[in-house]
Image (tube, rainbow, N blue to C red; front, side, top):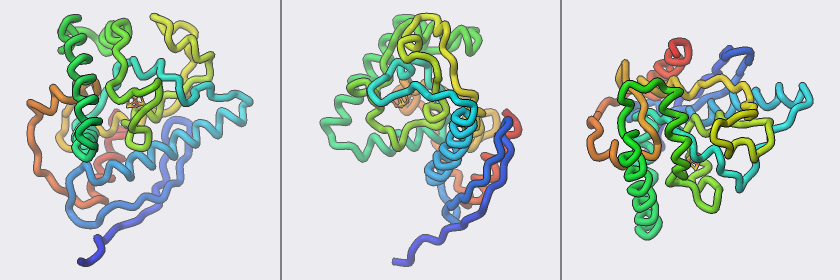
Amino acid sequence: MAAEAHSTATLRLTVGDLRIVHPITVPSAPVPATDVVPALQALVNAVVAAAEAGLMKSGEAISCRKGCGACCRQLVPVSRTEGERLLALVETMAVERRDRLQARFATAQAMLDDAGLSNRAGRSDRELSLAYFALAIPCPFLEDESCSIHPDRPLVCREYLVTSPAELCAGPSQEGVTPVAVPKVSMAARGLQDDGEDWFPLAGLMTWAATRPRSDVRRTGPEWVQRFLKGIGRK
Ligand code: SF4
């Protein structure tokens, strides 16, 4: 079988105060948007690394550590493309692991339903986030206070780092938490497949999957990347 052809380009971006030079490689042929997610993850990693480098120069240090999952009880907004990628990942898991995960998703969804947070009901993003955090729902992918899908975690999870003491992240109001100023490139994943596409909470992934609109849109890897880059400017 012939090897799949790929296209590589060097991206030069200015995001916030950061200048990013990043080589990106994607499939040359028309593919689903989910196929370029690894390249987008690498791009977000590069943005985060640049933000971390700037932080180190100013003498500050990131306090996030493996085994601290306080932030994994926040509302994690994911795009349709990332949702589809995560669903594909879950399908590759052994049945026992998948069953445990499905049970955690069901618990999370029941807590959201009980609290009336299954839909926005006119709430602002901020109101929704605070109400969600107050429920302390562990992300279904959180195991032993660590991310069980760390290499595949959503883009937004990569962008959340703090310099404040870890214990503050567990406080109900997040008072005193000092996030690192990482440009939220992840938001460009919203609308990657359809203009105007919104996000949903990661904890609602399975419920969303049951009703999500199917898509067979295929574009070349460079076309998907162009759409993503345009999205960075828009958000
Ligand atoms: S996907 Fe991983 S990093 Fe993101 S909230 Fe869930 S457990 Fe935490």
